Image (cartoon, rainbow, N blue to C red):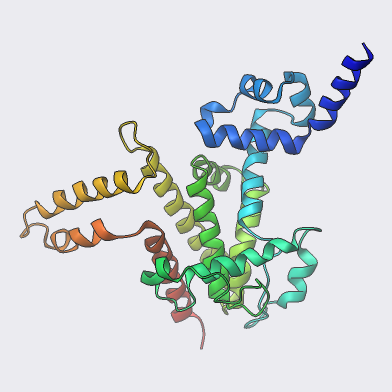
Length: 295
């Protein structure tokens, strides 16, 4: 009896909100939204539903917590501010805003900025891939453009790793912009955009445009991976190459007089790299921001 009581106490000590959320992420990664059920959690954690609900109010709250956890890992906090043009506020403000114990994640900004490449040539994004080339410390010396690319790639990579994430991000952006995730994304994008010298009256519109592009592109990429037919894993190079080859040949077979443009870019579509294409879109937006800001 004493032994059984001690075992029960150990189980209660081990079970925590953090462990439940981690298990929820594992279930979501393995089977998508439908895999996250109370039954699956209780079986995986060897506990009862009551113990789970003691730590999380309901399954919707658990799904939100899983999303917040993944985003917290993808987006370093605080986002270093470069003390750039106008009303940037500088790195001191960034340090004061961030939560305790999380500043170490800021180095990921520099790592992703290095992978994105500091030259601004999106076509070489796949080649650069050297962490630390562009301010690897994640500190305030990084250019705003590099911090924006790093945040964008952080979201893209997180959505690629967790196929269920993109739809949840889109839902929270449109239905619950006051939740924990949307403010974090907007803050991460908005600070470096502000440091680029965007006029104050354009902060919301500019940041919204970039956020909507990033989430839309990540959602489209995740959906395309899930829609690959057959039993083959959708993330294999062979499946992707076969799909692009089919699409490319279909475009080339179109009447070149009626579809001259598609006929000309068919081979480019087959050879494109998704991550580099994503970054090219970010760079196009940043080029527009740079060109339109006051001189």
